[in-house]
Image (cartoon, rainbow, N blue to C red; front, top):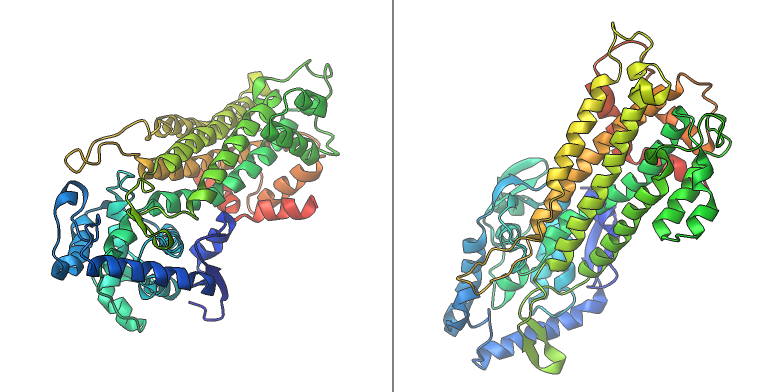
Amino acid sequence: MNKERETYFIGGDGLRLQDLKAIMDGTVEVKLSPNCIEKINFSRNFVQQLVQDGKRVYGITTGFGKFSDVVIPQKETMELQENLIKSHACGVGEPLPEPIVRAMMVLRANALAKGYSGVRLSTIELLLDMLNHGIHPVIPEQGSLGASGDLAPLSHMVLPMLGKGEVTYQGVRMPSSEALSKAGLKPIQLIEKEGLALINGTQAMTGIAGYAWHHIEQIIHYADLISALTVEALHGIPKAYHSLVQQVRPHPGQIETAKKLLLYLEGSKEVSEPGQLRVQDPYTLRCIPQVHGATKDAFSYFTQVLSIEINSATDNPLIFAEEDEVISGGNFHGQPVAFAADFMGIALSELANISERRIERLVNPALSGLPAFLTRHGGLHSGMMIAQYTAASLVSENKVLAHPASVDSIPSSANQEDHVSMGTIGARKLVKIMENVYHVLAIEWLCAAQGVEFGSKRLGKGTTIAYELLRSSIPPLDEDRILHEDIIMAKKLLKSGELKREIESAMK
């Protein structure tokens, strides 16, 4: 990794979702803010005093879950913490992508930096050293109930800190002990409270949701812009986006969407007036502000929940050293994130649903007035026919994925932990929905651009940028070709953020 990276400081507060992108990409080095060190040490000293005094405190001098009433002798408290990590590291499935692993690592470090967890400063620093050296624990994606936190995935994150488990380092999967040695780092032995503090939290579900957040922010921009290009291909009526319509139903997302549509279509000669071609448009064009806007409002809620969660202390028990209190609570319960991830998945699915209906309108000559399936040589050529099939398949899959995970709960730990959030499942489903939406919007972009080929191509201020960027990589469909390659290229352009950057630059 580049040793000349900028330094980003964390201290338990002030971490922003926007900052996670650079951390996940490894373009910044992360260190603890000097301001949080005193509180970390004070909290740790308080825990040590509890142990020396022989106090009975959950997870420090007792077992876990159903074993919370089992007192652990002081001489075995360190063994207790390591046993916790080994026994809880029982995840299955494919490894989480490295960007999500990096998000988990920094979010856990940020939670510990608040000074309510009772861990040593050196323990947090090792986690950040691994992050900065690009030592990424291999974390199976399945196995979390979302309470008591993300126990299984976070245990896999901690194993390499003990010199156990596997990591990826410099692109190679290897034993953690080997990677630590190569990077000049040494494993640690956990002491009282540390194992529990490291795994009792919501950082897997929040890390996955934080990874999705950046992409969803882009997708919301793209849905407006690509739909505006479709409006031009179908000679739609922008009058429906008039500010007067939005003022009498002032949902923030609706107002913003209508403004952006009018901005993107500014100067277009491809749109029409009411009565010119038809009196009013179908819902998929006329109701873009209402549908896209509702998704934006859901995204605002999603953002609010994640912004709180990434700066929260989520383990148990919490150490309030200044108040001389150790309190067993439930901040590890992932319900807030579970609801937000489920809600965002539902709202995001709707962007693909309405996009697929616009795709159908573009390729169906009975609805569009354009050549069937957007090809000049129908019969010999199939044009965009099966691209619509793919979009339909993806939105159907999203309808299954959008079923909320948070409505389920299965008791665990002999019914001691008798209600769980399933938030990590919700976050994982959100990422799958997100990828499907990218594909559907990529297909609409291709179809909308192909649709305007049959007009004058006198496009609007924003839609011109969208059309030209696509055409810089993908030519018009003059004859049949392998559309899979076009779809993948269009999606790649969307995920790269280039279209968002160009639009934002042009619209300043």
